[in-house]
Amino acid sequence: MRRSPFGDAEDSVAGPARHFDVHLHLSQWWPDLPRTGHRSDLDYTVHGLLAEMDAAGIETGLALPVYEGPSHEESLRESVENARASGGRLRAVGTVDPTKGRAVVESAVRAWEGTPDLAAIKLFPGYQPFYPHDKVLAPVYEYAARYHRPVMIHQGDTLSPEGLIKFARPIEVDEVAVQYRDVRFVLCHLGNPWVEETAEVVYKNVNVYTDTSGLLAHPRTPYFDRMVERARVVLQGVVDTVGAPDRILYGSDWPLESLTTAVALVEGLDLPEAGRTAILGGNARRLFATPGWS
Image (cartoon, rainbow, N blue to C red; front, side, top):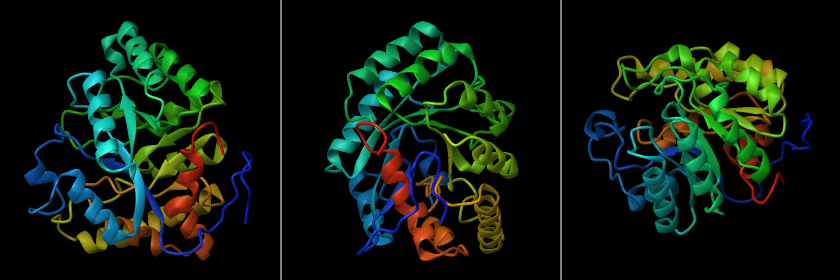
């Protein structure tokens, strides 16, 4: 199989499944859980999430914030507390709203510098009206380069009808991917519906990854089974276009989707076992390793 220019070989992990979910949301500010949770009796706690992770063969994951948090400080505090309560199986992620100005962005960077176990930064263009190449974000990307923290960027459709998805097109990330070659970017949700655009940005830029979350609507959606099959075809097309699975990351978007459904989407791909294993965990373990790239 192809080895990426960063030297990240596709490989398998021996023994029981050790999946790594890069797209989990566990927040008191998650919107309207009875409507958006993948089932009505969802145990939306650290304990409940870990139980679902165990059932799906998921060893670890990222505790992503949501954009609805009242401040970057509160979002960071919550993510760190969830990570600690999980016994280290969840990893903390920071965020900031750059539309609040450069002083707020610089304050967030200082907070992240004081959080040594931080795994990544998550940005929410689309939900918030900014482009990823806005100059106010320079301190975020400089921090990411200095501390080797991947920057995850929401892409494509938004759960909120108030979102402006023009800000969340994958092509808008190309500029910063070129400008900040020492930063690794993750295009979340395969940029859905701009999946082919995502595939091109990932193919072109060796420092850009994408995750498999966000291809599916809520499980109560009509024709959901057909949607799963279509999503698998779409995901297969991304892998084929990029040319290798080494920069594709498994993510679920829990609590919106069940972990078992999200894992099955990847397990059904027409790839050698090593390729599926890389997507389900190997790639993420390398990408989010600290310190530095491993």
